[in-house]
Length: 301
Image (cartoon, rainbow, N blue to C red; front, top):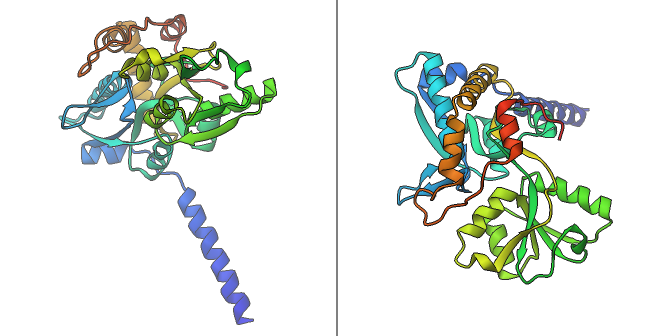
């Protein structure tokens, strides 16, 4: 009998612990205002959205600039004389756990706004600051030119990204048999293709282009295929941070209307990159142009 009591007590304790772990954090507005500090997550290998520059490894990038502008508006809305920004390096997996635990208050990396993430990860997204699309990167002499050429090939995706879902849909529709694996960082995926341990890397087109542009021999790899998805990239926060999202969205509309986003786009996509010796030379797409004219955070992808 006493064993039954112990067992039931252990089960109830586990259930209580699980419920506590899944309890969402409250609105972080008051915490940020009281501490006068906000913690921002960024991806060190997310050029041109975010990357580290100099010996101090200072985070810079298109998403970082936009994030700083939105946080400046948040500071004003909170009536604060100052609001310190602390940066924390994250990757495709830790961005969700760090946000859920409160280790970061906002994710300023290249994160796609999806319905599944909004519902299963209990997050919300700002209005998009970029529209990407998944494509493929291969060696120039690979002989791979489109999705139909993937049968029997070693295909990699970055862990925790939407590229895996895109790949799974394509494999199912085209009846492909592939060898799939994941790498933790974008850099690791790119190096795998360079080294020949993987044949294809699926990822957002602009990130593929960025890794190609900054490599020592960019002519050795190429981007192939049509866009396999539409990826609206946004700042991510917890779904309880309703007040913060309201401020961010309002300011995103201002940045769109006064052409500040257009200016930042030219800085990061059409000009030599700060701390680098190259430019991406990628003009603004019609998808992003339309999104800036008619912004929305509702996507069923």
